[in-house]
Length: 124
Image 1: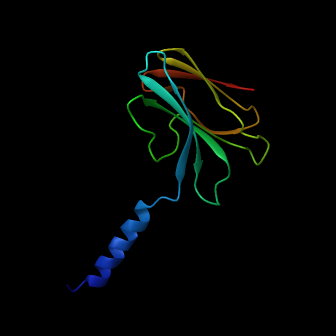
Image 2: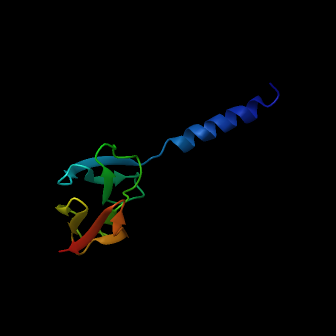
C-alpha cells in the first residue's frame, strides 16, 4: 500500500476524535407521574479545563443518559459563588416539570420545552 502512512494517520485521528475527555456521572433520576419521561441530573466532567457543573437532561423513560451535555439545564458554580449542592425536580403534571437550582449559579443553558414537556425554573 503506497499511502500506508496516511492511512495510519487517518485511523489515529479518528480514534482520538472518538475518545471524548468528558464523562457524565448520573446523580438522580425523576420519572414523570405517568412514567413516560424522566429528568436525569448529573455532573459532567471534561478534565481540568472545566470546573464543577450540574446538568439536566429530559428524556423518554426508555432512553439511557447519552454521553453528551445536558439538553435542558447546564449550570456551574460561577467561580465558586455557588456550592452547587442541589437541583430540585418537581413534576407538576405528566408534561410539566419545575426545576429549582441555586440562585448564585451561572446558567449556560435553560430550555423551556423539551419534546412535549414544558419546563419552568426557579432559583433560590
